Image (tube, rainbow, N blue to C red; front, side):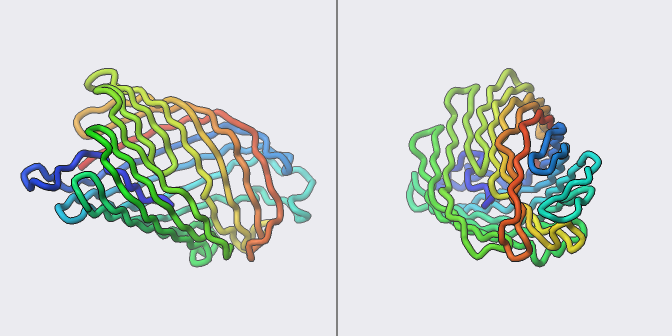
Length: 294
């Protein structure tokens, strides 16, 4: 579940003159993970990911709306295959296939008092390889929670998220937690979605952030040409590192370097039955992020 349910700016909903204007933020991210061994395949691969997302934040006296749209492209560059086999089938040059995920999410925050708001959100996405069937790669989820302003500079969001899975009748029940804490004038701690970020403002233009992210719900449908025809790949990974950012007016450019670990790929058949679990070694990851607020 990925709708962002923490607001990125303070709101005074009891006075129209202080109500922020709607904002549109566009982000472009590029991440390259170094080549590492994929146990069980006897091969190494590097991973390249490109993500484009747009977020429309529309504050209101009775309700704040947060709409997101994301396109995510994953490319796997495997070393030349050896004569051995994957799950008893001949190896493909790229057994995971390059995948694309399209996601739409919406979150609605409704004030209940000066310090509490109700949070309701949903998302729907479809993910498949280039020749896969996107109609069979659909998953959706909902979030229900509360947003509480504990004190100026500290906001908590808590609740639950229920999410369906590709080719799996079981639903994921996930705690939905968020924190936005302005610890000091130059230090902000933000936990939302799948990322914990602590940002230190160095001066008017430069900032340094410690970023830890976890990806436990990435999955996509393979094509009928794959080693496991119309199978499903489910990926889990964790990343920790530093990001150096430069901001000019409403535009931010940031360079990131970190370490990706705990990587695991679960290969299921078309019906969602487990075929093979593949662990990947930890690897260095580098990233570039461009952000523009309109």
